[in-house]
Amino acid sequence: MTDTRIWLSPPDVSDLERKLLLKAFDSNWVAPVGPDLDAFESQVAELVGVRHAVALSSGTAALHLALIAAGVRRGDTVLVPSFTFAATANAVVYLGARPVFVDSAPESWNIDPELVAEELRLRAEQGRLPRAVIAVDMYGQCADYDRLLDACDRYGVPLIEDAAEALGATYRDRPAGSFGLAGVLSFNGNKIITTGGGGMLVTDDSRVAKHARHLATQAREPVPHYEHRMVGYNYRLSNLLAAVGRGQVQRLPQMIEARTATFEYYRAALAGMEFMPVAGYGTPNHWLTCVLATDERQRDRILGVLNGRDIEARPAWKPMHLQPVFQDCVMRGGPVAADIFRRGVCLPSGSALSAHDRSRVVAAVRAALEA
Ligand SMILES: *Cc1c(COP(=O)(O)O)cnc(C)c1O
Image (cartoon, rainbow, N blue to C red; front, side, top):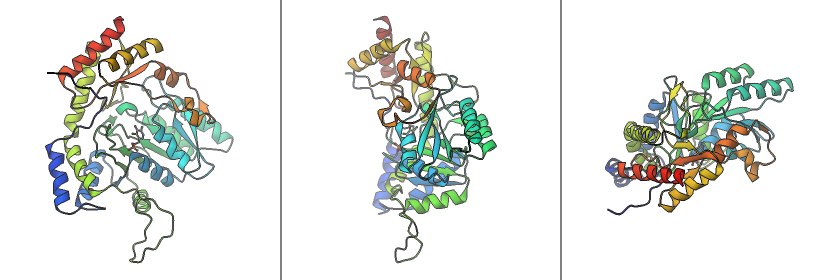
């Protein structure tokens, strides 16, 4: 058997998804809406434990609509973790608002609730509260929602949960995506489940869901002659892709199990290394397993050896406050996120990763540590 390239987090699709996709195709429910879209939304709403789900073309679209629901407008500020994927901050800028970046808490790598509380207190005193706070459930582990919601509720600032990476994770036995005004999910190709590309806005608030659905379908009024009272977007997910999603959701428990087994395997086999901490308050879905090298040089050595053996690994997210595009934005704290970036390596974590390939990854990391 010759070794093939190991990807970081490739799609894991089966015969079930194929059958559902072809069934949708053959029934001519190709676009735009259809029974698979409705069924996919109900499945995910039930899984997340919320009343409403709106399937969209991407997680970024869901973020955009969630921020509109929170009332974000031109000139506003929004607190955003610096340690995230750019999409989180980009959606703020789409609305003409400015992100204010906040450092991570070392115990979870998620937005630091202490810094959020402090920033809200300072801004309340100055009469310039942010319009919203976004928390991200990084690499499939929830942020600390008791403390975040406590701070947000005190000042009446809505919280949005970017759970793009965290479907199936929990915080104090409550599912990721169910916190705050609205939750955001992604079904991009590298996420825990995929529709090839897609996302969802999940919420308990029927007005938020209704408005998101309206804006996502070009804000067409329900009359035959194309009446529009506001500017909308073309953000709905296609029924064909929702059919793929229906199969993926059914397989989510096994996929989380597989990723968790990979995490446990790496942790045992690389026992000398520091791993992303698991906070005591919940159960991550272990979307990506991330380790910390001792320094930047060792990180680059690990990445180099893995790449040389045809294994895809990546540095941890480069923090937003260090990105050229956001260099003029305010940053609160910063050393935690910057250190994770300098030393962090995300290891292949796909749910279809074989035992053989897992051991190839470990052998490569060990070789790099001994070099
Ligand atoms: C993937 C991701 C998004 C964006 O989702 P898309 O479906 O790719 O638009 C947003 N936030 C985070 C944290 C992500 O990882």
